[in-house]
Amino acid sequence: MRQRHVLQDARRDREFAAFVAGAAGRLLHAATLLTAEAPDDNPRARRLLTRSLAHTYAGWNRLRGDDPYDHARRQLALRFARGDRRGPGGLLRARPHPGSPLAALGPQERLVVVLRFLEGVAEEQTAALLGLSPDRVRALAARATETLLRRPSAPAPAVGSMRAVPS
View 1 (spheres, rainbow, N blue to C red):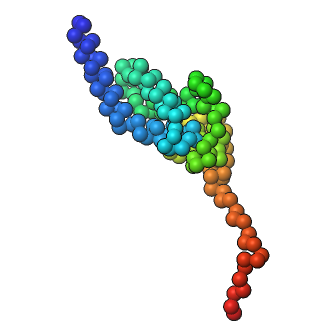
View 2: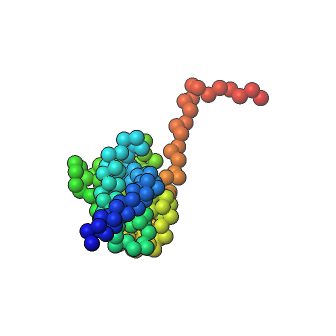
View 3: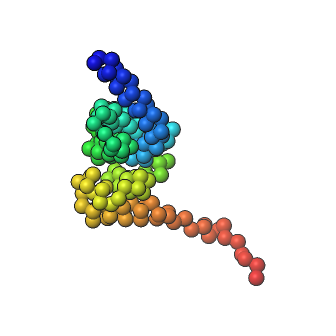
């Protein structure tokens, strides 16, 4: 009986290690976008991912045919949405890194953009996961998209630097 548990635990560990080897990079990328940190300096994203993967590992045997990536992504999103207040400053109170592609967005907008556009989660599923209406998710996605696509206007050239164009 004890031997069987040892074998089951070893199999679970191998399966989870294989899952992490395949999914951790993509999940870390999503976490880094959520926290709006620089890709090479992302301690909050790593902490968020570690806690999400730990929760996934704890429930690994109960997944039974459910998609472990979906479970880990859901944990990542929920922990971010709640602000994962452990640690210094929490996630939501941290300032975005100016070099982050999503730095111009608020936390809820970043969450919707990452789930909808990076992860391809349907609008209704995103709404259910976050406890929002589909209309609210749609509005957040539209506002975030507008913010990201809005190009800063270039300053007008100085009058003295304009050259006469030969005719």
